[in-house]
Image (cartoon, rainbow, N blue to C red; front, top):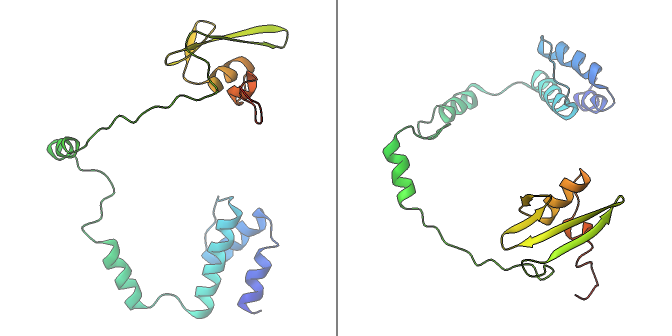
Length: 164
């Protein structure tokens, strides 16, 4: 059977069959259940067995690249190096533009939800609902409903096409 046909046939196999085929071509089993990964690995192995693996020269070059001393997998443990990097960091305060849909601080937003009245007070920095302060209206809506939803839409504010 041609390699092309074998690789095409992999697409029709289920996960269990792919694991069995993996064990055939690699000589060891796998617990992987990612279909795409299994197909790619098996296809690569089939191709390598049929047409030959990497040349010795390619293997040596890959080993050289892997042993490159400049590569770092974790940050330096030297505390002076860490301090030096923080010394040259500049912080800038970006101007915060409040959302046009929001009323001024102190306003109480009211909405009926499942028979209960929800009241949210707009603060200078955040929103207060049931004695808790939240960063966003979406966080308030999540606290009320139990699932994520747009806070502006939940409180029926600034809907598309609506003039404030």
